[in-house]
Length: 484
Image (cartoon, rainbow, N blue to C red; front, top):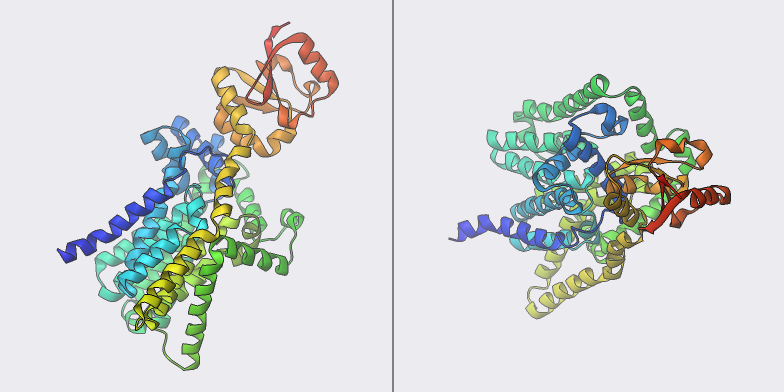
C-alpha cells in the first residue's frame, strides 16, 4: 500500500501543479511576450489548414527545431484553434517538469525536499506566468527534466530501458529547443567527472549521447536546405549572429557586459524571488565550505551543479536573446527550485531539536516566498488588457468574410501588432501608409486603427466623402465596395 502511494505521489503532485498553472489559460494571446505565442499559433494554423507548405511557413519556421509548431498543430486538430488550446502545450510541459523534478529530488534527497522543490517550481513568478506562453523554452522543460531523471536512473541501475528512455527524452528536447543540445555534452561530462566507473564501462553509451546532438542538428540543416524557401540558410545564420550578439543588427540593440549582468540579476530577483536567491546563496556557501574542507562532491550536489551550468549556458552564449527576453532565465528554474529546497530542508534539519522553531522557520520562508511577488505577477497577467490588436482583430473576424481583403492604413500599428491582428482577424490583411501607395480597387475594406491614427487629412477626407463607414473594435472601417 505504501509503495503504491509512493508511486502515485508524483502524479498527484503533477495534477496539483496543473490545477494551479492552468489558471488564466484562456486569456487572450495578447500579454507580455505573447508575440511569440501568436507567431507560432499562426504557423500552427497554417500547418493545420495547408499542411507543411514551406513557402507559406517562410524561413522563420527553420530558426528553431520543429516540435513546438507541430505540437500546437496537434492541439488545434484535437481541440480547435483557440487561446487555451495554444497555451495548453506549455502547461502540460510545465506539469511534466514538476513531475520529473519531484521524482529526481525524492530520489537524491527526501520526499520533503521533493515537495519543497515542487512548491518553489509551481509558485515561482517565472512558471506561474510563462508556463502559459507556448515557446520553445517552456515546451522543452518537461523533456529536459525527463532526460536528467532517466540519466540518473541509468547511472544507478545501468539498465538498457533507462538509457533508451534517456535517448528518447533527449531527442524530444533537441527537437524542441537548442538548449536540449547542451545536455548531449553535459551529461557525458557529468558522468566522466562524478561517476568515473560508470563512464569507463559505458563509454559507447556516452558517445551515443554526444553523437545524438550532431545527428539532430545535421538533420535540421538538411531539412532546411532541402525544403526551406530561398534564403532560409542565410536567414538562419543571420539570426544566429544576432542572438550571439554579433553583426550589424545586434549592434543596434547595444549593451555592455555590466548592463547585461545587472539586468539578469534584477530579473533573477523578480522571477525567482529574493527568498530563493537567499536560500540558493546559502546552498552555495555550504558547497564552497565543503570544497575548502576537501570533501568530495556528492552525487546529489553534482546534480545541482549540473542544473546550475545548464541553466545559465543559453544566456551566456546568446546574450542578445537573453537581454531582450527575460524568460530565457527559465532554464535556471530547476537549479533555483532544487537548490532552495535542499537549503531549506537543511535548515529545518539543523533546527530539528526545536521542532516548533524549525516548523515556524519553514512556514515563514514559504509565506515570504509566496507573497513577495504577488503584485508583480498579477500585473503580468493584466498585460493582456492593453493590446489594441485583440478587439480590432475580433471585429474584423466577426464583421468581414474570409474572402474579403482588408487594407490597414497604419504601418506604425502593424510594425508591432501585425502578428496579433493576423491571428485574431484571420483575414487577408495588407498594411499601407497612404491610399496613393496602393490600388484601393484591390481591397474590400480600409481600416484605420484609432490608437495609431497617422492617416493624412487628405486621405481621411477622401475616405469619408466616398465610402460608407462605421466604427468597431477600436477601428474605423470603410467599405470600399460601397460608395456614398
